[in-house]
Length: 225
Length: 101
Image (cartoon, rainbow over all chains, first blue to last red; front, side, top):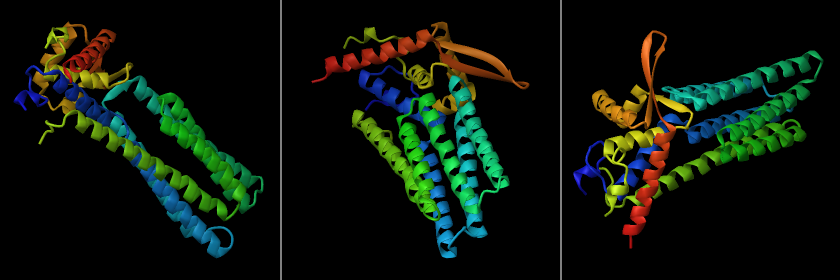
């Protein structure tokens, strides 16, 4: 290995070293500019799994609606997931501008508006005299539809197959969880919804490991110490 | 090895890293100078020198603007620069195939 193999030096390169520099540099650039899907799917997976399991456990022991503390735990988990997602995405796109940054901002606002509308619809149902059971089912089902459709929108905007699969799955969960009624709806949201996110996080992790291995295979003799 | 087919503007480690980083952005995207500098771990002076060479070759577009009152510089590949990078990468691959086995 000659010293000129090390990126940062200004010497000439052989073709294998050049290809390696390209791969390593682009991997690093993507990691710095694009949100880490593993983190986002993981955070939402844990929030849904633990949050909805808490609601389910409380609802089952009470034989009806979950207790206040369970809703509090659920609320804290979901709020944390929203904050982590927003901070992470904004940090990653900081320092870039153009088509992708604009699309990302519009996508972020779409989520916000989707949930403002969901909140308004649920309040409207309450005012119209919906029972607590209808409220619980509608709130979850509508939220799930918003999530599923926005993932499909993201798949279209960012040409992302993972988001497409997740969007379709969350829409299936929306229907299934609502048809299940109380308290089963919470269990389905936890296992199928939260589990779906965690499965996608695992798939993304496997993809990253495979890419890194390919990168290593392309340069067996010259890993930087 | 017939390395003459490799574009000399790109075929130097520092500039290759600059071009590869810019090529990793979407074609409608730009990156701020400080973020590019941090990504590449180059000094501002060194990076500016290479960017000027790439700009002179018509490969990089430098946009100077203001964010509030602070001046900001954004960098992006030109269509010509992107095409040059893609040709460079394709030439590398064919060189390796020719040299291999």
